[in-house]
Image (cartoon, rainbow, N blue to C red; front, side, top):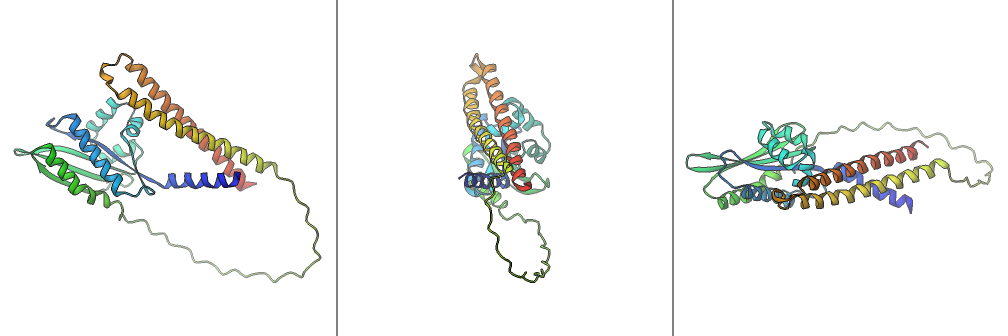
Length: 269
């Protein structure tokens, strides 16, 4: 039973580690022509399109809360997004594999929108689209029309070619002459195996605790984000968000180290 649990947990962790993450950064307005609420809605529509286009088993779309957790606070997130001159570098700051962002500008009497998608590891621009619009509904229509094709470019990105080494034919040794079979004595369970199982269970438990803390982090952040301008306990609410995030990180890190130690004991002994 323990081996089955360990195997399932290892497969789940492997799948999570192989999942690539895309960060949809808040849409910017260079001329303050659109309200913050409308910019947030345009960002949410881009994020929703990415979730619908990209397969969940391969890609994970980062939430606003997870991006804020990397950058420290909502105020710092807004400041960094405005001041950053390189979108790929901003993606590295939030530990994403891909990053996309929309930007509102002006051309003549019309407003413009430009959405870019970057591969964070290479810094290469994978695709973009632009368009003119006169109102927020026209901008939303442009996103709905063109963003699906933009995110589909992530599905056809060429992967590095791995050249397999040719297998060398093995020469099987001549079968040994049969000898009288000696009855085997059942060996007692090794102490190293018990230690490895213990490490596996402790590490898995800490990782599960980290996952629960991650869910708690979202709740505390939502609580902090409700009418935060008028709340007298603003500092306490944000302190709770930071405390929960630190606890989550400790559980993940310590749990991962202990689980890796259990795997190492399994392999070595």
